[in-house]
Length: 426
Image (tube, rainbow, N blue to C red):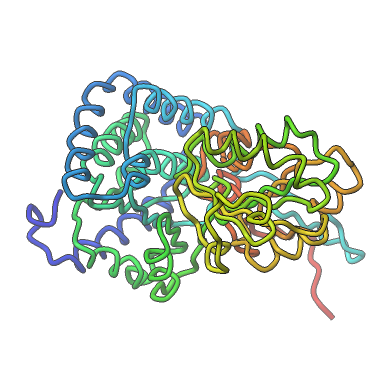
């Protein structure tokens, strides 16, 4: 029901959602893994069957976004295609095929006093996901949360709310048809930002975790106002470093894919670093390929000494997540220079080294402290599906609880079970 149908103020409407979510989270303890998987597979089928309806709704959302003059990168993220819908369905099938983490034993050990201790995975409880333009997040987040035994409250962006809702309806129908609690997944149908404020208040203590998925302003608001723990997905200021021992063909292909495959995703490279020992050899084929693909290049003084056609880059450029076909380029002194640059400018998301020197690669992989670090591979592999997780809620860039793609296992906690035989503590 909508707020108008229930005739409730927003705060009361949201608090009722919280109460219902808590009840559903408790009821999930009685739901089998088979039922959860059957629901996910049914949702996959329904979404495919309703492709034409979903595309028609999405077309209207996209048209409205274009009329409002939203950025191309934003519109790209909210646009669905037949292939995209097939991908959403496939992700559901892959999540269903994964092992159920709930109740899984993580570790067992014995104490000298005879106590037997076991640590097992448990659901987190009630998760609120606040996101912006990506309609697929509706299904990905709901599926991952439910597979991990949680209840989830979804609040999507107003620009794509109709698409998100039609996807949610498919998902929810499948849950109910397979015996899951009605309120284990709920969708906030109103666009008023007061709904976000209500979620961040904690809904009378019923929210256990908040996950923001969107731009800087959204994440900053959530981090500032949330009264529940936050699992943040921050900027993707991702780097590709071309080492002196790089294969030039690999370097060109990896850089091009990292930047231009989809410039608007968080795993897109925003800065290219080149070892000063090889910059003159690699620059001509690399710059020609990037420019040919429509990429704007902004370089430091060392690059501009080689190529005066490069736009000057200032310090702020190296901190910027463009989400557009723009690439900052800098020259560094070997792998140590690259690591130092990344340490200063990176958002801790994803970095890649291109080199045939195994020792250099291992140094980079060991010393760079980002959530995802790659060797001879595109930064656009920073994706839960590519990690074999089926889907993801986001890329966690912090250092607590989860790092990198947040999938099913990352939405669990654990408890300690202690089995005794009459022991009392002296």
